[in-house]
Each structure stands twice: as C-alpha cells, then as structure tokens.
Length: 327
Image (cartoon, rainbow, N blue to C red):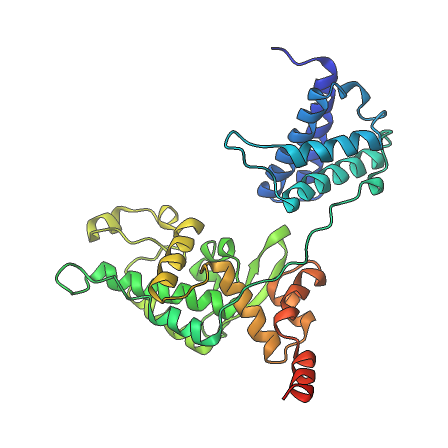
C-alpha cells in the first residue's frame, strides 16, 4: 500500500528533524534512533486517526489529548502497555519536534502547551558497603572446573570480572561507558581518566587505589596488545591469538549477566546490575559528606534534579532529628 502525499509530508518533516539532531545538535546515533522510534508512533497515531492532513498547521490540543490516550491504551502483541515514563518520552520527543518546526517558521501547535504526565517520585536502591564486599568476594565462586581446579582462562575471567566490578563501584560509570573503555585512555598511575557519556559530554572520573590494584592484576595476565580494556577470553590460546581486539570487546549484556550471576552467588536479595553499583557509588559519596554538585559532575548528569534522587537515602538532617527526638 502506497503512502499518501500527506503521510509523506509528515515523514519528510520527521526526517528533516532527525537530520537536524545529527548535524546541528550532534546527537548520538542512539538518541536519534530513539527520537525516530517515538515520532514514528506519533505518525502512526495521525494516520490511524486520519489526522495527517491537520499536521503541522492544524495540530491542536485535542490531537495531543487523543495521542496521550492512544499511548496510554497502546499494547503490544503480548498485551504489554507503555509505562508512564515511556509515554513521557514520546511526548518529550513530540515537543522537541514541534519546537524545531516553530524555529523553522513552520506553523504548528506551540510545544510548551504539551504537558507531561506526573511520574511518581523515584526511589533508588543501592548496595550497602557490606553487600559490596560480599559481591566482590563472590566473583571467583563457580569458576572452578569439574576437578575443582581453575584453569588459565577461568583465572583471567575472575581477575577481569573483579576489576570490572571494582571499576564500576569506584567511578560510577554507566555500563556502556565501561565496555567502551580503551587501555590507552585509562591512566593507572594518576588514577583518573576522561570518559564521554550521554550527549557525548566529557567528564573526568577517578579510580580508588584498590581498584587500580585489581586492574593491574588483570592486565598483567593479558598477553595481547589490544585496545579494549575489558575483553572476552577464548577457550584456548589459539583462538585468543587469532581473534581481533575490537571483536573481543565485552558487550553491555555480558557485563550485566556477570553482575546478576555474582549477585546471586553473594546471596544478595536485590537485583544486582551495573547501574545498581552506580547508585551505590553516588549514595556512598553523599553519605560521606560529598556535595551534590560534585556528585552530579562525577555521574555526568545534565540536571541536578536527576542527582537529587540519591538524597532520599542519605538525608543526615532527618537522621539527626530522629536520633534527637526518638530514643
């Protein structure tokens, strides 16, 4: 079935907007993919409701209301709907799209008229210091072979996994940032390095002395000169020598899977993920007196509001009030 000219016009404007994000805004490929996904849903809504002819000049608040209802009632083939947060992502993308059109002098609905849903205040989970230590100590569990001994590849994997967990906890890196690290960018002597996070924004992160020790132990067992800091190990040396460095770079999924496995072995009831270690890093800093602006910078948050979710777990003022009046 061929698209109508009006549908093509919607798609043309979406394409122009995505090109603007790429060229003028220098947005990452992943960000552009997300905007494309959300705006295709909007185009689908317009077509389904036969409102393509109203876009962009005739778009009104009734259309936006209808789109919000449509998102709220949308279900996939398994009957799963969209969370409130995901629905808001769709509306944020629509607002950005309309803002772009307005700046291009294309008549349309004013983007500031679109309200987002109220999302319940987020409470983050984190690991206590005791749980973190149990997690680290459990890395080697289950790595032995059938005869109870640990082979060379298992030993390397243990050293690598411990180094990764230590790095996540020491720096607060996102898992995507961790797997993207190269050996040449990490200064083990100065115990610091620069990483580019969301929005390609650069920030400096720091390594604890203990973390550096585990990284050095892991790297000492590497016989290659490949750039990726964290790699997968082949089953035998021949495969290791034939492999190409970039192809051996660990994926985010493999790190997430490792964290879950070690968390279960440590007997931790919480769902252990790399992001949970990021939460734990931030909570530990605030609990020990770090100011929230510094924590924001170390986490690479664009807004202080994002960082403030961690203050619920570290409110020393309320703790002191409780101690004073509830003996």
